[in-house]
Length: 576
Ligand code: ARG
Image 1 (cartoon, rainbow, N blue to C red):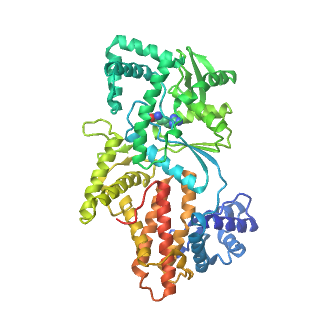
Image 2 (tube, protein in one colour):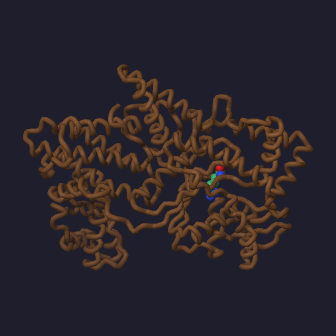
Image 3 (cartoon, rainbow, N blue to C red):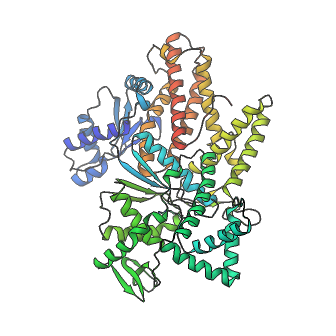
């Protein structure tokens, strides 16, 4: 039950009946304090101003017209004209029952959309590094969330698999193959790339060959094509290991690299010229955009084809947006890319819209994020200043988690310890990222992320096992809970209303791609549960009715925590 949406609708109806102009907003929010009720409607003031009447007078009229019988137990007018809404306890109890028995925790079905999510997007012949980590983690949470809600999600891994660097990479792969006739070791992609570059810079003959290979590759040469494929496959096989370790849902079928759009590029350039959007300028083909000014205050030129005929990253993103609409039938396209590429995307999409490749009804959304910083506030690097490999980061997380868990559980069997360390370490890395607002840079701090206190993965995972274990100790099956939920204690009520806010939380996360909102909600829920558990005995409740009602609250808490964490890609365990 999306209470916020329900109340918004009711207040809007009352506002309209009270004479508000069409489109007036009810502005219903969760109240910050219990004394202001569960929700408050703040839209009256703006409407009163438009109508030129005293806000409190309008508020009174709205309250009279508000049809909330059975839903709210009272409404109050506060301050200049806020309407505070106190939900009916009986109604809340019934919604809890419904959330427990209905599929998907009682969420209302959504109108399914086709949503393309562009995330992860590492580059070929390069190791995935921490910079790709945020995109992968946050994008995967979005994919899981939208899929859970019932949307048709298309994961698009926009791998960097094209460009002039492939000449030197093919030439170097060839050299390695010639020198090591048998198995060649490409496990260290970073070193491979570095060596290829070194040869290119230092060996003129090698560089010549490399340049020739670029031309051949672009011309569809079979040998170069095979070598290229090998590089892509090796890279993606290594990335797949990282995805699996990270419990990320990407598979090799989700790869839609830059090269996928090659065939579209000449047509797009021709079309943009024909439409008068692109012009020749100093040998290159350029789109001048009035929306963007260069340093001289003139329209900025975006190159879409170089003098030598080569296409650019922007040209590919123009084609890619077109493809996602035309071929994949996207209703929405979400791009999880760091904020430094914002201008690039805006330029590409401005061209896309002007050319009419994607209609306005289809949203292209840049869900950007900041950088990952070290504790010193500088970009996260190894001590020697190099980029940290993702696989090494995951190894370190595992070692640290294992040590911590072993200290806390000296009796635990080693199998269990290692399984737990896996779940906790991956959870910690992901949750630390997901729980911060993505638009800012974030500081990577081992001690914080592995702490068992605060808004961290270990705390949340532990909170889940605790709730789940209460239910287990009761020795009762879900189906044996026949008594209704009854909310007598304030804490029972606070927990119940918060549980019902799962739907409005996930709806917001789905709309804005802000998983930290889900993290904050789950953390708050875990805290409310603790308060409830301390003050309202469950297993030793005064009678069986109360015991069953409280067990139901515990059960829905466990389910909500588990489902919420699952939409974030965080695993739970039954014991820890
Ligand atoms: N491969 C790019 C990088 O590593 C990210 C690609 C993002 N997606 C896109 N459609 N441009 O920076």
